[in-house]
Length: 236
Image 1 (cartoon, helix red, strand yellow):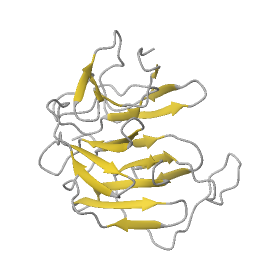
Image 2 (cartoon, helix red, strand yellow; image 1 turned 135 degrees about the horizontal axis):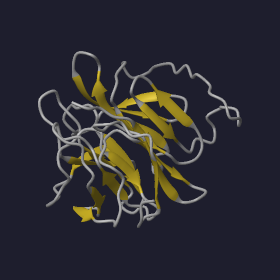
Image 3 (cartoon, one colour; image 1 turned 180 degrees about the vertical axis):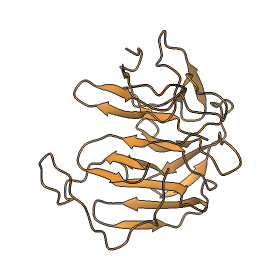
Image 4 (tube, helix red, strand yellow; image 1 turned 30 degrees about the horizontal axis):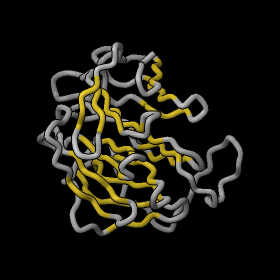
């Protein structure tokens, strides 16, 4: 089993959770963190229980960071938490994804939903798709006709066109190099002329200056240290 990083970049503040957890950029203008290039350790009144391999992203509709699941050392989790820059809040939802670790999620600005895919529940590699609505704070399971292979550590990211794309992952046997795009109701296979080498668990972020996705590293048969960029059409 291979596990993963999670990341989503927007503007504002940065949240880092260890171990093997998440780096997230949010939009919080009133977080109270100095406008300097330095790390500040926060001390929220309450926090989610300790865990690794959680999924996390920023949801512009609610203005919160969304966190789901993970592994606490003994079991797999399926709780949902939000963070507004000051306070963590556990969200009671009508339904929610099954417990898992090593899933990924990213915000789709076209459909205005957070898309969650993949993970591992201790027995199975997962290939289900779930959507988070930041206006209602509820999960809905999608029913796509097509979907990527069940994997851990896929790279989910918002491409420059606003859609959520998925690359790679680990299916328990092989690292993947396929690429997919979420259309709002189905997964569509993409076929760029060139793609990064097969891998899972790479770090992925969007550079707002160049309007390109940047991918680095990850897990593979030989762990890569190469850097790739994606402009919505072409990997370089």
